[in-house]
Amino acid sequence: MIGLLEHWLPEQRWFAGRGRERGPIRVVSRTPVAKVRGDAEVELVLLEIDISVGGTPTVQRYQLWLGWHPWLPQILDHARIGSAGNWTAYDALHDSEVSALLLQHLAAGAVVGDLRFEPEPGTVIDTTAPGLPIGAEQSNTSIVYGQSSILKMFRRLEPGPNPDAEVHRALHAIGGKHVATPLGTLTGIVDGVDTTLGVLMTFFAGSAEGWAMATTSVRDLMAEGDLRADEVGGDFAAESLRLGKAVAEVHADLATAFGTAELTDAERAHLAAGMAESAKATALLVPEVEAALEPVLETFARFAADPTPLTVQRIHGDLHLGQTLRVLVGGWAILDFEGEPAKPLAYRRALYSPLKDIAGMLRSFDYAAHHSLVGRAPDGQHQYRATEWARRNRAAFCEGYASVAGSDPRDHPAVLAAFELDKAVYEVAYEYGHRPAWVPIPLQAINRLITSNGGRS
Ligand SMILES: Nc1ncnc2c1ncn2[C@@H]1O[C@H](COP(=O)(O)OP(=O)(O)O)[C@@H](O)[C@H]1O
Ligand SMILES: O=P(O)(O)O[C@H]1O[C@H](CO)[C@@H](O[C@H]2O[C@H](CO)[C@@H](O)[C@H](O)[C@H]2O)[C@H](O)[C@H]1O
Image (cartoon, rainbow, N blue to C red):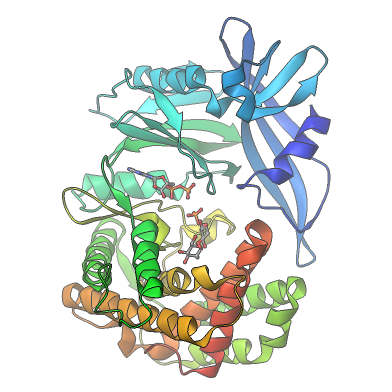
């Protein structure tokens, strides 16, 4: 089995060890779950791999739902992993019989070995809808059941409760707006600790993804050589404004649900030191970050010395346009409160300034504006248009946020610039590991941020 996985795992979109030194895959446990399709056996396999990040050894853990079939049906060919003896292994999360089984287990509160399938108290789970994995493989694999629910199976695991399940539950308990309703969780044991393996939520049927809407707007602008961002049909600024309001409301709900605190000087210094550490680790991977390291570290040092008092609270942690949905009722929904998947659990559950999320969204407007220029010959006109689009939508988002929160994020330029730079550094490492062709997007942002005074673009 290891031989098959050694070929297959590094090719998966959600594998986070790409481009890094790593040891062999270790199988930590195998839990037989069910027989499906007459002859196929399905098991949950927990894997570990030692990975070196900037010279520091870390262990990455993954869950894999593995099916073994004596003759893989054509309909599952796209999920094929490889053959061992008379059996063909496949990624069983792509098997409609397995997705149906997972939903039935959740509805029934089943226990299978160490696995606990638990419906949220008082919820009714519709088990009749067929389950299909959504096309876009992201950090995790999600299965949509008809129009009613979506099951996110976390791929990379960290022992402990997953913040996505924890935050949705807490926001739901206070009647929070703009988030899906949690319907159930799947928990297993990883390293001796209860660990969330999957979470079932209500599905926002008929919604549109913020990233798709924003990039459509950018495409419209690029196609109209003579028109300004406010003149083209697909102007997105009114949506950016509404999105800013929704994020401010979610931040207020998170503060109510989990409480707030003031960032102490020691915590600020620790945060700035963490940003500097990440930048140094990324500089070891990417020479362009090494070249910009000195001014990057100066920005983090300015943040460490900035006297602005900062209120901290639970935040989203990895907010970007791909985590937003324009829904039929209620404007915008915010998804995926997992935090940055590459960061340790304690970091993802810690309290931060909401400005960190705002910086994430500002970076995302920049991504939406510039991603269509990747791999194209430098072109002043389109660069100008991209910058214009990003500026307009970043400003609208901040205005919307300020109108609800009562304070404008742009009034804290040093803090915002540090968070944006930290995010751009994270993005360079993320793109390096997942989509190397996109590395120039955050790299250009790093260069812009270290040469501007941050904040007000
Ligand atoms: N409750 C939901 N309703 C509708 N679509 C959803 C919902 N949750 C997630 N999605 C869709 O699934 C995609 C991936 O979800 P997300 O939680 O961001 O997973 P990942 O951690 O893999 O990025 C989203 O971009 C969105 O298109
Ligand atoms: O999988 P997640 O959504 O949890 O987040 C990871 O993947 C994101 C990409 O899918 C990545 O976001 C980066 O790319 C986006 C465009 O695809 C862009 O809008 C974001 O601003 C940019 O950070 C995210 O960083 C990563 O954690």
